[in-house]
Length: 240
Image 1 (tube, helix red, strand yellow):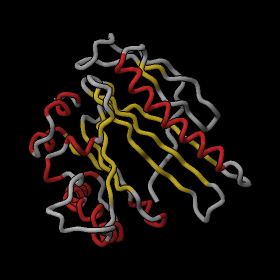
Image 2 (tube, one colour):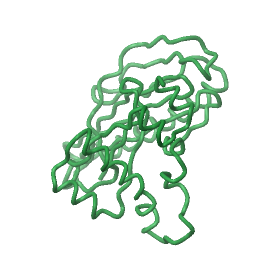
Image 3 (tube, one colour):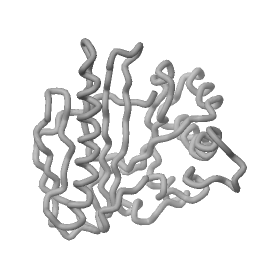
Image 4 (cartoon, helix red, strand yellow):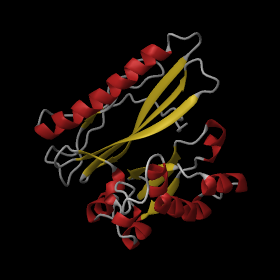
């Protein structure tokens, strides 16, 4: 399964720059937690069309998790924790990393991450992968040569190679993990921008429970992103 260490409590109000927003930060409202282990999703302040569009998606994400939590907690001694980390708030983009940890009576707990990524000019929800060069993106079949359940995993092969090249630099992985990555044809990756690290972050997604310890985060720093090359707006958003 995928990964989810619980993220810190969100209890403060962040005040950023004014609401003209394609090149500025946005003011964010960070509500009080809905439960001791369940943080409320952040919101954009304001009632302009961009804020309303983004907030609608954020509210839907929270509603889905609340429903899943309600169903999970029907089980004896179940746990369902959720949190959010704002990894980038302008310019150009808003990126929120969602995190859950659940145990709903299964053999093993489940940890997961997911990214909510938005264009602050239009309010459109985006996949950060679309900001990468075309030859790294798994969003289109390569000449139709892959079919069925082979498609998604094989289209991530360029990203797998990129991840492994960075893992050697960032986080030396045990041989068992490297072997697992090399043999896993269905391995996907989660990608999000991180303003603090000034990098695009990568993490394996969808791994089996026994391999979750291999799901290390690696960084794609600005110098590498410029070389790939990556979308100029992302470079600027990360401080480049």
